[in-house]
Image (cartoon, rainbow, N blue to C red):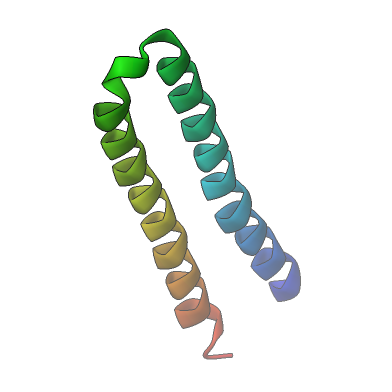
Length: 71
């Protein structure tokens, strides 16, 4: 049972940020297509969103290893 929970949590921590990164990429490309002159602002917002998404993934993995690393 513990292995199933570990695999489930790993799956969520991988798929969640991946979906966010895909959504950010899609939205930024659409925004650049509509307004190319706003590229610096869009790039800055995109990078900040990617950093937060990756930070959430890393924190989730660290929590997972802290909880299940004891057993």
